[in-house]
Amino acid sequence: MERSVPQYVHCSVPVPRASRVPWYKSTFPAYAGIFLWVGFYLKLAEPTIGYASLSVCLWGLLLAGLLSFGLYYYIPAMLGMQTGYSLYVVGTSTFGTSGGYLIPGLLMGVLQVGWVAVIASISAHFIMSGLNQTSKGLFSLIVVLWVYGLGWVAVKGIHYVGRVAKFLNWIPLFMILFVLWANRAGIAHYEPRQHQPVTGFLNVISIVIGFFASGGAAGADFGMNNGNRKDVVLGGIFGIVLGTLFAGGVAILSVAGYLGRNAGPPSYDYTAAIASVGALAPVMFFLFAAASLVPTCFSSFIASNSFNTMLPRIPRGVSTFAALTVSILLAITGLSDNLIGFFGIVAASFGPICGAMMADYLYAGSRWSGPRLGINWGGCIAWAVGFLVGVPTLVPGLPAALVKADNPSCLYAFAFGFLVYLLLAKLGIRPPVVATEVTVAA
Image (cartoon, rainbow, N blue to C red; front, side):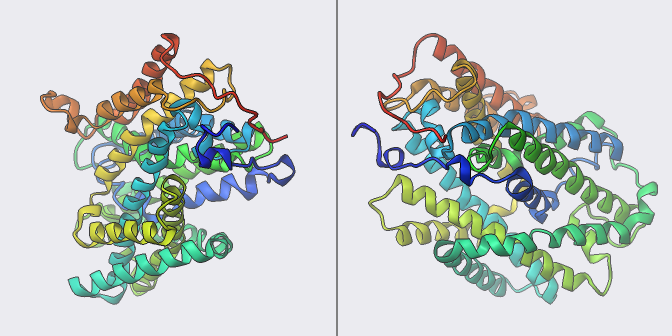
């Protein structure tokens, strides 16, 4: 490639077709493991079945899974499959070779810092519950050891983590089924606290997409290991659509059953449903924490790769552990405990990325047009507009109706990213494709 192309693009090598693997060995188990992680459904019940019936929320989960598949995952995955390149490289068409440093490059790393904090906080709380302890000092110690220890593993031995993931990812599967079985008798007796079905339905959409949005953009990294469109589609259908419906559905049914049988203090938190199983509850808290080992390692690894790729002059260890220190502070101070709010930030950040990438892909004739020189202002402006629309609380003076929790701003963020990019592309506000011999996997 030309010398004007950054090193992270210049040195990239596509995954050859001969090295690709089928969907059931790559995309499906990876995404299924993501949705089986307890952080997805820990706070899912109150904003959903607290307002709407179980059937309405289950339909909402199905639609949310389809939207996540079609709007957030499919195009990045197709770009990865067609080219063999990762998100960082295929994103240079939408945001430019220089713009890609920030979007999605550093942005992905920054959000992974938040994800590490969220996972560490949940894991530490679960360990504390298993020990029946409430000490803030012990909680802080667990967070520090958890983040630094697993961060070191992620940097030094991520390939071993991948092997362990094949087993640890399925621990939550058996546990959520056990929790459902223990609370099954109360499901028929559950009634929503409020009867606002539209609110519950829209909350399902917002929470699922917020949780999944960055994972959807990372579909390029999964797609580059797939051999054809069939792998992309089947991996997404079984891993994302069915993963959303199954994990989310089992979780809200379990909480509804817990509330319906009056098994303890009224609580929509999934931890209450876990605690209701009796003597096995402490063991299950430890197992749920153990299942969070893999997400912590992978988020730490992605953050490390992001900062090392985009800021190569800073030693990898320095940038990684500086980022993890921020994660620790977010977890210890409790700033990472607002799961629904964090999901909203993720959706606002990656909704317009996926929308702009879809517009770029379709405008180029359903293919990757190649890296664009410098900053693609079409993509950057589209992202900025979509982000502001997706996080309405950051925009002063907006009516209160626009910032309600049940407002599906995640979809607005995607739509504005798509439409603004398409408009700017038609107006010619994009730099030229770099005149280079980009190798696409054969």
